[in-house]
Length: 125
Image 1: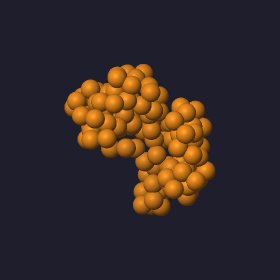
Image 2: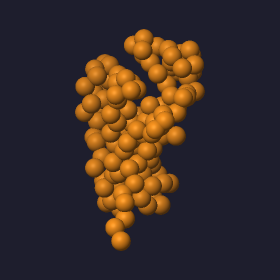
Image 3: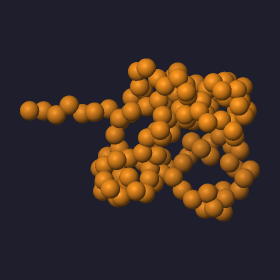
């Protein structure tokens, strides 16, 4: 499951901030980040498709530092131990999933971001 913010009811009902790990990163050492999702029609209007082919387009997406609804800081994430066995693993440059051997547009494996979970803060007594 793709991690979303759960700090308030609005963030659970309207997931605008999502945790992601870029496909270019290896699943063993990839570090994810929280980013603000946007409407694809807006992205197409402001960024032509040629610009999306540039890897820096994905790096320049707005990273989220807090919930847009209640202002709570986004949680720190850590890799699950053990990681799910159904993660999408791509080693051929972005064409086929190594886990299920399907093309990426048909792959039903879990995204790399599902290998992360929020770090739970220990409550002080």
